[in-house]
Amino acid sequence: MTHTISLVAVATAMLCLTLAGPARAGLDVKTRTTGSGTEPDSSRMRTEGDLLRIDTAAPPSGQGATSMIFDADAQVLRVLRHGDRTYVEIDEAFAERLSSKVAEAQKMMEAQLAKMPPEQRAMMEKMMQGGALPFPKPGAKKDRPPLEARATGEADTVDGTPCSLFRLRRGAEEKGDVCVASWSAVGASPEDIAVLKKLGAFQAKMTKSFAGSMPGAEQPFELLERVDGFPLRTRRVAGGAVESETFFEDVTKTDVPADVFEIPAGYTRKDIALPNDG
Image (cartoon, rainbow, N blue to C red):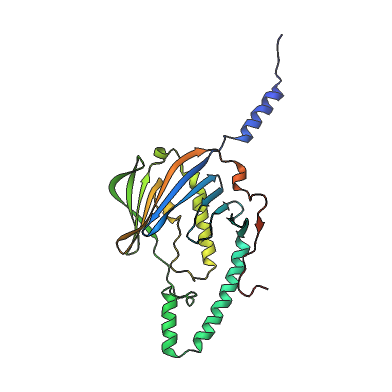
C-alpha cells in the first residue's frame, strides 16, 4: 500500500517545529557559604530563561527556610517563608510606596535636626552621611566607585574545576577575590544566568527607593558584569582578613519544572507593612 502525505500536512508540521523552537534547558546550582564564627550555609539556585528561584535553608535573618522567586519579565520578586506558609511581593508599586514613606521620614528627621543645637546637629549629620544612621541628607552621599575585577594571572582549582583568579576592589577598598571558570568547563553559557543580571538591575532600582538610606549596600550580582565566565568561588575580605567564602557547586544543565517558579498551594500572600500605612 502506498501512503501519500499532503504538502499541507508537511508545511503544518514544519511550522509547528519552527514556532516551538529548540528546547530550553535551565540551570541547577548548589551553593555553600562558610564564614568566620558562623555555621556553614547552603542554598540552591535554579534558572529557566527569565525565571529564577533561590532556596535557602537557614538565611542570616534567622527566619527559617525561605525561597526567593524572581520573574524578570513581570518585574516582581516574591519571597516565600515556608515556616508559616506566607509570601510577600516586591514590585514597582511597592517601590513607589516605599519611596514616598522614606521621603516623609526624611522630612521629619530634617525638621528634628533643625531644632538641635549646632554641635549636636553636626554630629548627627556626620553619622548619617557615614551610614551609621539612616536617611542621609539629600546630596550628601557620593556615588560609590564601581566594582573592579583585576586578573592576577594565577590559576586555581575548585572541586576539581580549573579557574582563574581575579582580585576585587571598589575604589581603594579591597573587597576580596573570585575564581572564574570558563563556560565550557562548567557546561553552561552566559544565557543560563542572564536572569541574575536582571535581578541585579531590579535590586538596584529598588534600592533607589530608599533615597540613599542604605549607603553601604552591596549589589551581589554586580560581579557578573565584571567577569566573563562562571564564578566558582568568591571570597569577601575586611581589614585584610577573609570574612566568608561562597562556593558554587554541582552546576547542572537540566530542565526545570515550571511549578518550581510558582507559589505553592496553600501559601497566603502578606502585604509589607510600612510606617503610617492607613
